[in-house]
Length: 421
Image (cartoon, rainbow, N blue to C red; front, top):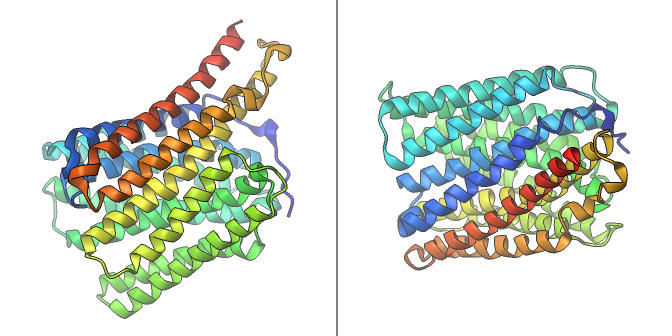
């Protein structure tokens, strides 16, 4: 179904932009950490530096951009504006940014129990604000064509709520408050965070942005509506089986999740072959993301050592699927926001406003994609030879994020300059 976009319902540019511009800085910090620690960062999923890097990427980059995008997409696509978007966004951004920094420091540096309590408090506040604000927005009357997107958002933020609850319990455990089966809780926490939150919401957003920006056919309604529901149901079944130690049911749920995500990937590649527009850098980012998601599913079922399989799968889902998709969307969303708000701003003469594609040129985006792809390849290889390749992977990640920060920062400088001219 063709969606009608309500551009007039956009919030102020300062609602989503702090999220979108801050997020790459957390990857930059993770990359510097990787260069500093080297082998220790990718030798095991349990080392302090690995845990710190994981949360810098998942909270600081992926969750930060997802939340910022929600403030932008919901009113435009679904007609579901977040009430008091400015103050709400500021509170959510502050809690998420501060909590991520404190948590990464506590995990990576072995800081005292008080830091885990502080991190849990800040992240819990940010999560609660997002859940309440977004929940209230999507409880309003929704544009009929946007119901699949809203269904995906509802289930994904439910996955975020589960992830937050489990993460809070683990933080209290690390602070010395209470006891729990820590290994089991970490597995369930990671599964809900990666699949129930990041993959589920990225897929729900891709159902909107891939046809919009890539000129592909609209995804079939059964996949738009069914994938979020099935993912949520299968994750619930898997979690119940894990808690009750039912390995047969766990495996069946994992196969179901894998088959569903492979269908999503196959449909996306099929639609890319039928797109109406010429391939651009956004196409390359999405193709890389989909290839990594498919490879992550295959790796998950390979007979590898559990620690090595978890590292490979984590790199493929977080850096391969999540970061690639988000990088591509940042190169589309930020220039469009700058262009649109300049067009609407009486203080900026329209004759001076460049086209969207001129705000961040294609060559710059392609350059960043290449560095990101090389960094991703080195990250994957580093899980097999961390002593040799971990620091080169960190170097290429640093350079790739420097390019992204430079390009997005250039768009911001252009916006400020034309408004003040």
